[in-house]
Amino acid sequence: MPGRATQPLWNVLSLDRRASRAGGSLQDQIVAFFRDAVLRGALKPGARVPSSRQLAAELGVARITAVEAFDRLTAEGYFVTCRGVGLFVAETVTDAYLRALPAKPSRARRAPAAEEPARAVPSAPPAPALPLATGVPAIEEFPWRDWARISARVFRERPAAALAYGDPQGLPELRVAIAEYLGAARGIVCDPGQIVVVSGSQQGIDLTARVVAAPGDAAWFEEPGYGAARAALAAARLRVALVPADGDGIDVARGIEVAPEARLAVVTPSYHYPLGATLSLPRRRALLAWAHATGAWILEDDYYGDYRFAGRPQTPLHALDRHERVLYLGTFSKMLAPGLRLGYLVAPRSLVSRLTELKTATDRYTPGLMQLVLARFIAEGRLAAHVRRMRAVYRDRRTALLAALDRHARDVLDVGEPPDAGLHLAVRLKLDVDDVAVSRAVRRHGVQAAPLSSYYARPPRTRGFVLGFANTAGAEAAPAVRRLAAAVRSRAGRATRQSED
Ligand SMILES: Cc1ncc(COP(=O)(O)O)c(C=O)c1O
Image 1 (spheres, rainbow, N blue to C red):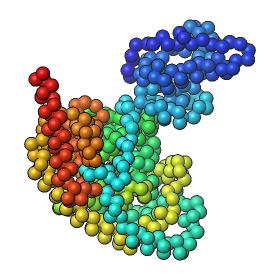
Image 2: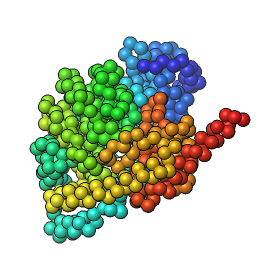
Image 3: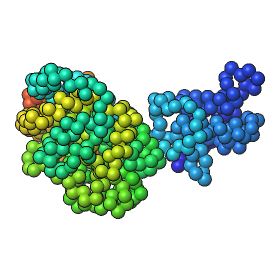
Image 4: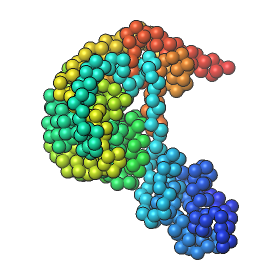
């Protein structure tokens, strides 16, 4: 726990001691003062807070007044207790999150906040997506005709049940369709009773983090990794233990060194996000063995699902798991469209009711009509057909992007060994230039190249770009890559000139 220098800020706290106090009781005034100081940034995250005894003496109030004020601030998440050391301003809680916390006084103890700052969830790319944008599939290829036909049929049936309060675990018809699809497409054998339908992966990560771990517990997280998942772990107040990922995926041995006691590991084994590595078989085995030995859980985020362009699809970790330690997380955001907000967890049986209870407490359930349309869409084989068609479209777009990189950017960008899967490629810079600055520069010209360094939570950060091809039609790839390469060269030239001056 950090312990930066004590700031004697509370010396300026002057209490209104009149019988009729406009600012509330003495305790209310102390709480309001510290809340405001944290929100304004006058008290920085990690700053040590005085002891209640010290504060009571300095302000001339009863000790119990200071104790209760600090209990409230701790319960509201402004302060965290480090047992045997003292009280500190919470490290990671964003202002928005702090404001959303209940202001109700409570004596409930808060566990320490996460180690890593809750970085903002990456902002949504504009629609329609710009060339090289990552994160969104080709929305213009959405199977509107089938979707409209199935929706019209469903609506004509007037399914009253889909408009009433539904099953929080998810529409049974959809769970059956997903279980059958997973068996055929991904080799996952599961019972529809193990599936919990969620409103996108994001909710699946949130529910998992809150069900399998308690605030203050550690969770392994890939470095670099998916910022939105990291933010969900931090919001659940888990300690984010960064575990490096390399060409074989997450380094399990490092994870065991860094946080052997972690309760959860969030991983992207099929296509590491964003570098694209497949988790090697020895590491898969090691990860499962660690989880089995320690009772930890693994959240397998299989966000790209069936988008593999050569060879057989990777066997998911879930299919190798003999001890029910893996929660498999699927989403329709890439296979269909993120705006549907539809995903699912395949959970170990022991977790299903707790996940469902938390889902009920959070948003009751995911909208029923949409689930029903999707269930029919899958059951009629339209999902499999759509993915088949899109695989061909994306394969061509990937080929066009690789050709453009080879032709126009070979001197500045290193493509490495591009994986035969996914909807993006991570490329490294060969020159020493700031990828964030280049990304900003090309954005002004209508090209969206996400800086690779921004996927790292802490240094050292590899510089490069994460380039999506799902929304870059073949003919758009070359001009976009030319623009990006020119921006890199121009930035490198500027740096050289500056160092010569
Ligand atoms: C690693 C990863 N997981 C999951 C998702 C999908 O998130 P959601 O299902 O919440 O739309 C994405 C989308 O970009 C992602 O990159």
